[in-house]
Image (cartoon, rainbow, N blue to C red):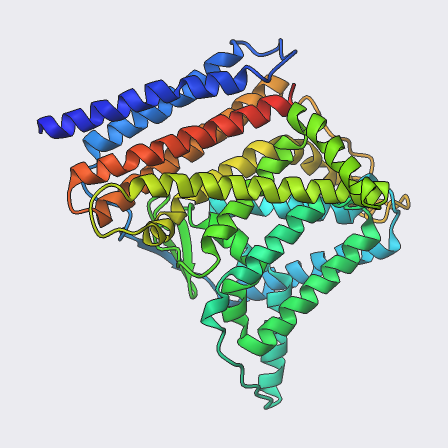
Length: 470
């Protein structure tokens, strides 16, 4: 018992020392944020204290794994017609986006396509997935279309044999897809051009349909469809899970430990966190001084101004992804020194799911203001999707209410998202450590390193937010 108490106190001491890190990071930001009701440095210390207190509480009050094999309770059976209706809605929205992209105005703020793609889809479905489970699977337009084709073919007596999905391929197609979308959103100069978005939407759907035709709808959707995999990732944090037609309720976070570990899984999480990291970093003071130098370098190599800007952004995006991967790997290298028989590759995979809540926290923190403000634009864009003066639903003259939440309120939501996400990561890591280490003391010691990782990620997130809002 004395040994365990020492371990807990050591963890608390470690985070107290690490608490200086967030305050130093915050010293670079929040310039001019006079509307904040408390000093900015308190945010950093508060975050570190919460993480430290969580670590101590877990070590003292969570002596055995609880999330590895959670109890689930069935709620009800979902009627088959729900999938048909949701799939039809998904296809209709996809068609509306493509049609708006080609036929509508090229002014992005007045065209339905950019808002649907970057706000309602990319951000909205991430939040909905955490709240209600893997909802996107039902609305997925290319999956719904493929299922409709298979159903029609079956009625006509047409059968097509599909091949096995290559095990070595894992989630790498999804990694490539999310990485490309992040590049489109954060680096590509013409990212909001409606016709280009329409072309890319059609190209992506075609790739998915081809993949489903070769390897099967479910096999491809579960492993290779970038958005299907991405939104399913966040649904692992939800209390709702659907299996077949049955809907179950489970403890929060308990879906994450059972996330199948396939090739590319760790990199998928690094891309998810690294892309939002670059989103904040590219709007901060460091990139403001570094970016122009990179652009000049590529210009000297013969690139045009636009291409040089995109190449510089590509370097920054890849760099942020590698930094996130390296930082996680550093924590794993520390963990391997505890206990026996656990090599880094094994630990790298078995703790990968602990990054899921961090990825969501980063996404919500960085995109919350965009969601809360530009999400309202769907009101008038739905009535006037082409920007040609139509008023289909009588809401074309609606406006965005920027007073729905104050600047300080947004900041509180962002900080709360980061802290809650990292506490959730600590909970998942502690629970997994108890499951794989032979002794509670070893499990607790192994999490010193994960605590440092969580404090580091929190500090990075706070610094990025403060730099953006400076």
